[in-house]
Length: 211
Image 1 (cartoon, rainbow, N blue to C red):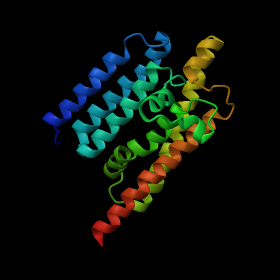
Image 2 (cartoon, rainbow, N blue to C red):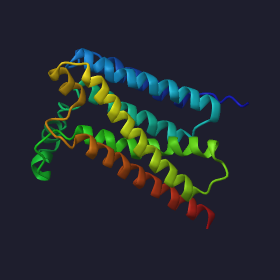
Image 3 (cartoon, rainbow, N blue to C red):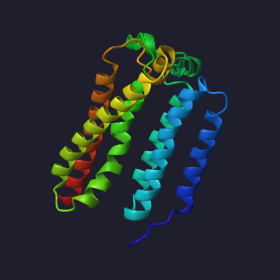
Image 4 (cartoon, helix red, strand yellow):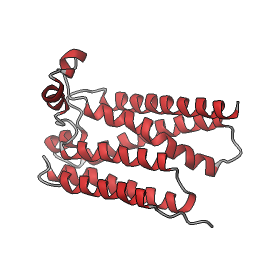
Protein backbone atom coordinates (compact mmCIF):
# COMPACT_ATOMS: atom_id res chain seq x y z
CA UNK A 1 0.00 0.00 0.00
CA UNK A 2 1.28 3.47 -0.92
CA UNK A 3 1.89 5.80 2.02
CA UNK A 4 1.65 9.45 1.05
CA UNK A 5 4.00 12.01 2.59
CA UNK A 6 3.53 15.63 3.62
CA UNK A 7 5.52 18.17 1.65
CA UNK A 8 6.87 21.48 2.94
CA UNK A 9 3.72 23.34 1.93
CA UNK A 10 1.59 20.87 3.91
CA UNK A 11 3.73 21.38 7.01
CA UNK A 12 3.57 25.17 6.59
CA UNK A 13 -0.23 25.05 6.58
CA UNK A 14 -0.27 22.74 9.60
CA UNK A 15 2.13 25.09 11.37
CA UNK A 16 -0.17 28.03 10.64
CA UNK A 17 -3.10 26.05 12.06
CA UNK A 18 -1.09 25.18 15.17
CA UNK A 19 -0.37 28.89 15.73
CA UNK A 20 -4.09 29.64 15.34
CA UNK A 21 -4.93 27.00 17.96
CA UNK A 22 -2.38 28.46 20.39
CA UNK A 23 -3.74 31.99 19.94
CA UNK A 24 -7.36 30.81 20.24
CA UNK A 25 -6.48 29.01 23.47
CA UNK A 26 -5.48 32.28 25.16
CA UNK A 27 -8.36 33.35 27.39
CA UNK A 28 -11.31 31.86 25.46
CA UNK A 29 -14.68 33.18 26.53
CA UNK A 30 -15.65 29.94 28.27
CA UNK A 31 -12.91 27.37 28.79
CA UNK A 32 -15.00 24.20 29.20
CA UNK A 33 -17.05 24.86 26.07
CA UNK A 34 -13.88 25.76 24.20
CA UNK A 35 -12.29 22.45 25.16
CA UNK A 36 -15.40 20.55 24.02
CA UNK A 37 -15.20 22.23 20.63
CA UNK A 38 -11.49 21.60 20.34
CA UNK A 39 -11.96 17.89 20.96
CA UNK A 40 -13.71 17.96 17.60
CA UNK A 41 -10.69 19.72 16.10
CA UNK A 42 -8.35 17.00 17.36
CA UNK A 43 -10.58 14.23 16.03
CA UNK A 44 -10.78 15.90 12.63
CA UNK A 45 -7.00 16.32 12.47
CA UNK A 46 -6.55 12.63 13.29
CA UNK A 47 -8.98 11.74 10.49
CA UNK A 48 -7.11 14.05 8.10
CA UNK A 49 -3.74 12.47 8.89
CA UNK A 50 -5.05 8.93 8.51
CA UNK A 51 -6.84 9.62 5.22
CA UNK A 52 -3.89 11.53 3.77
CA UNK A 53 -1.46 8.74 4.59
CA UNK A 54 -3.72 5.94 3.37
CA UNK A 55 -5.41 7.31 0.25
CA UNK A 56 -3.77 10.65 -0.50
CA UNK A 57 -5.46 14.03 -0.87
CA UNK A 58 -4.95 16.83 -3.34
CA UNK A 59 -3.36 19.94 -1.88
CA UNK A 60 -6.58 21.75 -2.80
CA UNK A 61 -8.68 19.38 -0.64
CA UNK A 62 -6.10 19.51 2.16
CA UNK A 63 -6.15 23.32 2.18
CA UNK A 64 -9.94 23.55 2.22
CA UNK A 65 -10.08 21.03 5.08
CA UNK A 66 -7.69 23.13 7.17
CA UNK A 67 -9.63 26.25 6.17
CA UNK A 68 -12.73 24.75 7.73
CA UNK A 69 -10.81 23.91 10.90
CA UNK A 70 -9.52 27.49 11.07
CA UNK A 71 -13.06 28.86 10.88
CA UNK A 72 -14.13 26.37 13.57
CA UNK A 73 -11.21 27.27 15.86
CA UNK A 74 -12.07 30.97 15.69
CA UNK A 75 -15.68 30.16 16.49
CA UNK A 76 -14.65 27.97 19.43
CA UNK A 77 -12.70 30.85 21.00
CA UNK A 78 -15.76 33.11 20.90
CA UNK A 79 -18.34 30.39 21.63
CA UNK A 80 -19.58 30.88 18.06
CA UNK A 81 -22.38 33.19 19.21
CA UNK A 82 -20.00 36.01 20.12
CA UNK A 83 -17.59 36.19 17.18
CA UNK A 84 -17.43 39.97 16.62
CA UNK A 85 -17.43 39.74 12.83
CA UNK A 86 -19.83 42.66 12.48
CA UNK A 87 -17.63 44.90 14.63
CA UNK A 88 -14.58 43.92 12.57
CA UNK A 89 -16.40 44.70 9.32
CA UNK A 90 -17.60 48.06 10.63
CA UNK A 91 -14.09 48.97 11.79
CA UNK A 92 -12.41 48.03 8.50
CA UNK A 93 -15.10 48.87 5.93
CA UNK A 94 -17.39 51.20 7.90
CA UNK A 95 -20.27 48.91 6.94
CA UNK A 96 -22.88 47.33 9.23
CA UNK A 97 -23.46 43.89 7.73
CA UNK A 98 -26.02 42.78 10.32
CA UNK A 99 -28.13 45.89 9.76
CA UNK A 100 -27.86 45.62 5.98
CA UNK A 101 -28.96 41.96 6.02
CA UNK A 102 -31.60 42.50 8.70
CA UNK A 103 -29.98 40.00 11.05
CA UNK A 104 -30.99 40.15 14.71
CA UNK A 105 -28.60 37.38 15.83
CA UNK A 106 -24.93 36.54 15.44
CA UNK A 107 -24.63 34.57 12.19
CA UNK A 108 -21.12 33.17 12.54
CA UNK A 109 -22.38 29.68 13.35
CA UNK A 110 -24.31 29.73 10.07
CA UNK A 111 -21.04 30.44 8.26
CA UNK A 112 -19.41 27.42 9.88
CA UNK A 113 -22.22 25.09 8.84
CA UNK A 114 -22.33 26.20 5.22
CA UNK A 115 -18.52 25.98 5.20
CA UNK A 116 -18.85 22.36 6.32
CA UNK A 117 -20.61 21.57 3.06
CA UNK A 118 -18.52 23.83 0.82
CA UNK A 119 -15.02 23.22 2.17
CA UNK A 120 -15.24 19.54 3.10
CA UNK A 121 -17.02 18.31 -0.02
CA UNK A 122 -13.72 17.71 -1.92
CA UNK A 123 -12.43 15.65 1.02
CA UNK A 124 -15.60 13.55 1.10
CA UNK A 125 -15.45 13.19 -2.68
CA UNK A 126 -11.98 11.68 -2.43
CA UNK A 127 -13.15 9.23 0.23
CA UNK A 128 -16.11 8.09 -1.82
CA UNK A 129 -13.94 7.80 -4.93
CA UNK A 130 -11.76 5.30 -3.07
CA UNK A 131 -14.61 3.42 -1.43
CA UNK A 132 -16.81 3.26 -4.54
CA UNK A 133 -14.49 3.64 -7.54
CA UNK A 134 -16.97 2.27 -10.10
CA UNK A 135 -19.66 4.90 -9.52
CA UNK A 136 -20.25 7.82 -11.85
CA UNK A 137 -19.48 11.36 -10.56
CA UNK A 138 -23.19 12.21 -10.60
CA UNK A 139 -23.97 9.25 -8.32
CA UNK A 140 -21.10 10.17 -6.01
CA UNK A 141 -22.51 13.69 -5.88
CA UNK A 142 -25.86 12.41 -4.61
CA UNK A 143 -24.23 10.07 -2.09
CA UNK A 144 -22.02 12.82 -0.68
CA UNK A 145 -24.98 15.18 -0.33
CA UNK A 146 -26.76 12.47 1.65
CA UNK A 147 -23.64 11.91 3.74
CA UNK A 148 -23.40 15.62 4.57
CA UNK A 149 -27.07 15.64 5.57
CA UNK A 150 -26.68 12.54 7.74
CA UNK A 151 -23.43 13.67 9.39
CA UNK A 152 -24.95 17.09 10.11
CA UNK A 153 -27.89 15.38 11.79
CA UNK A 154 -25.58 13.18 13.86
CA UNK A 155 -23.56 16.25 14.90
CA UNK A 156 -26.74 17.98 16.08
CA UNK A 157 -27.66 14.85 18.05
CA UNK A 158 -24.23 14.83 19.69
CA UNK A 159 -24.59 18.52 20.58
CA UNK A 160 -28.00 17.81 22.11
CA UNK A 161 -26.65 14.80 24.05
CA UNK A 162 -23.73 16.84 25.46
CA UNK A 163 -25.99 19.76 26.31
CA UNK A 164 -28.29 17.46 28.31
CA UNK A 165 -25.48 16.97 30.82
CA UNK A 166 -24.71 20.69 31.19
CA UNK A 167 -26.35 23.49 33.11
CA UNK A 168 -28.85 25.57 31.08
CA UNK A 169 -26.31 28.41 30.79
CA UNK A 170 -23.45 26.12 29.75
CA UNK A 171 -25.71 24.29 27.31
CA UNK A 172 -26.67 27.58 25.66
CA UNK A 173 -23.03 28.61 25.44
CA UNK A 174 -22.07 25.31 23.87
CA UNK A 175 -24.99 24.99 21.46
CA UNK A 176 -25.21 28.67 20.54
CA UNK A 177 -28.89 28.49 19.64
CA UNK A 178 -29.42 32.13 20.62
CA UNK A 179 -33.07 31.43 21.35
CA UNK A 180 -33.77 30.02 17.87
CA UNK A 181 -35.83 26.80 18.16
CA UNK A 182 -35.08 26.03 14.49
CA UNK A 183 -31.33 26.51 14.88
CA UNK A 184 -30.40 22.85 14.27
CA UNK A 185 -32.70 22.60 11.25
CA UNK A 186 -31.24 25.71 9.62
CA UNK A 187 -27.70 24.55 10.34
CA UNK A 188 -28.33 21.22 8.61
CA UNK A 189 -29.97 22.96 5.67
CA UNK A 190 -27.02 25.30 5.19
CA UNK A 191 -24.53 22.42 5.29
CA UNK A 192 -26.58 20.67 2.60
CA UNK A 193 -26.75 23.79 0.44
CA UNK A 194 -23.00 24.28 0.82
CA UNK A 195 -22.33 20.70 -0.30
CA UNK A 196 -24.65 21.09 -3.29
CA UNK A 197 -22.82 24.25 -4.38
CA UNK A 198 -19.36 22.73 -4.00
CA UNK A 199 -20.43 19.45 -5.59
CA UNK A 200 -22.03 21.22 -8.55
CA UNK A 201 -18.79 23.12 -9.21
CA UNK A 202 -16.80 19.87 -9.18
CA UNK A 203 -19.33 18.17 -11.47
CA UNK A 204 -19.14 21.01 -13.98
CA UNK A 205 -15.33 20.93 -13.94
CA UNK A 206 -15.33 17.16 -14.44
CA UNK A 207 -17.67 17.45 -17.43
CA UNK A 208 -15.57 20.21 -18.96
CA UNK A 209 -12.46 18.10 -18.47
CA UNK A 210 -13.99 15.14 -20.28
CA UNK A 211 -15.63 17.16 -23.04
